[in-house]
Amino acid sequence: MCVAVFVTSPNASRTFWLSVCLCCWIGGLSAAFTTRNSRPNIVLLMADDLGVGDICCYGNNTVSTPNIDRLASEGVRLTHHLAAASVCTPSRAAFLTGRYPIRSGMASPFNLNRGLTWLGGSGGLPTNETTFAKLLQHRGYRTGLIGKWHLGLSCASRDDHCYHPLNHGFDYFYGLPFGLLNDCQTSKTAELHRWLRIKLWISTAVLSLVPLLLLIPKFARWFSVPWKVIVAFALFAFLFFIVWYSSYGFTRRWNCILMRNHEIIQQPMREDRVGSLMLKEALAFIDRYKRSPFLLFVSFLHVHTPLMTKEKFVGHSKYGLYGDNVEEMDWMVGRILETLDRELLTNHTLVYFTSDNGGRLEVQEGEAQLGGYNGIYKGGQGMGGWEGGIRVPGIFRWPAVLEAGKVIDEPTSLMDIYPTLSYVGGGILPQDRIIDGRNLMPLLEGRVSHSEHEFLFHYCGVYLHAARWHQKDCATVWKVHYVTPNFSPDGAGACYRSGICSCSGDVTYHDPPLLFDVSRDPSEARPLSPDNEALFDSVVKKIEAAIKEHRRTLTPVPQQFSVFNTIWKPWLQPCCGTFPFCGCDKEYDILSTAW
Image (cartoon, rainbow, N blue to C red; front, side):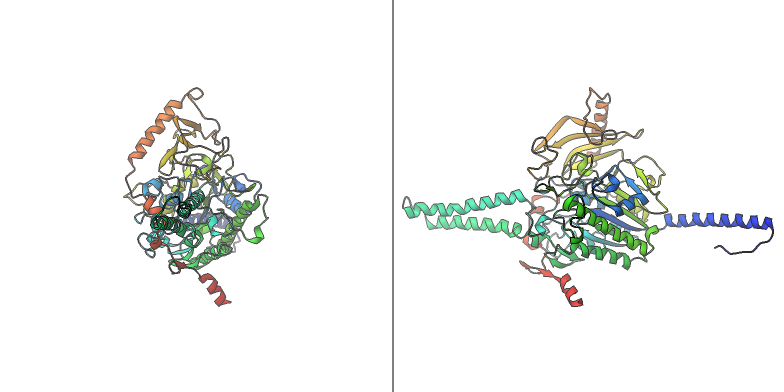
């Protein structure tokens, strides 16, 4: 506290001003100390399939992202930030638990189902996994998730909701228990298992022709075909059609659902308004809990296809509809930051922005690219090893604690968020399991200059495709590829023919492995060999030894992507109404009543 005092003597004046300076210095130090050691509010912002090259602060000059850029200029930007998987479900599982998805059974052995595909399936984030939301909830945080979940819903009955966000540490949930698909918009081409659906239609047509063809010899009197045989073939064709069409024929109604906590409020959701509703809910959550520590996880639907964008943003960017969608997301980030400013919460809030994986390259509509841009990095979403699939933005802002405008080139992971939030929120890490993430606060604050990660392992489903070694004694980061996907057509930079690259089957195995120095060659354009790298053999042996040690730490767990868990089950299908006549719009009813 400073008090105005009138003094007359010069000595007294000098003493007074010295005391004032000392008082202010101690007061400022005290304020900084209080800010750092008190539990901050936490706002996590995660984009869906955003390429690391899609935002200005990471080098893009065709899309305007002033609000995300503001976060970077006022905080710390990570340039070597990595997802634990190149598709959303396993990546988000690792983000929430701080563990490689293979440890929780959230990695798939199949190319077809790399992520959870049905809300009526029985797989999901196991209930014995402890998320950072649960850690902070136990420390008195009010926790909320707004947006995409995509980590399962029910186990044995449609209402048990064993995998629901509210059973994983969140006090409040508003959003999509699944995620966004082209199937959610009636005007778009189906996305879920598109090629499988085409094969099913062809198979149905062939089976339907069989009984018709059997009628020809019967009526032509070439030979007698019993009616029982004809009816049996017709019945089989009909049942075959019903079995697959009951799920794939109603994907929008089964998967595109909007929920508040355990209640379905739109089935199917109205895709034209869902973004606005989620922003409204995020701002309301901040207002509701602004006087207590809160964790808000905003899991954007942007920038996943079908790129649902408000009219005022259409045609806004130089990069077509995809760029428009990125700019709308940036505007939503700005609204959240404005709310923190208005409520005087900015200095006491840790904000983090990232994406769940790299941008998807194969999504196109005619000549228009509807997927992300991964900058200088090779590959994209679905490619377990190439940098473009796993290199993501990473921005932290915490005024008075983190240095503004700082850039860190050390390897870090989405899994690091778990121990970092536990540290800043006063949580206690579980001692009965391996946590693969590392607390980033010493690195972010500048107390250390080297990442704690010496080795990082890159899986495609359950298959280890690549690994990197960050040498402790220098800045070199080596990376080996044991398996790489086969791009199609030949010479392309992605798997355009299949729509997504395979983890097994249509891949190339490398023995010896491909070796890159990604600290000098981040584009992975110049593979090293014993002929041009004297350390080739020693580096490969060092990484192979680390992989053996890593594999010794893996224990058998139930596989959430087993065939049984991933198929659609009518008795698990969430339903607003009486199954199978599911449908409601309670959000619209509330608005109509209020009007």
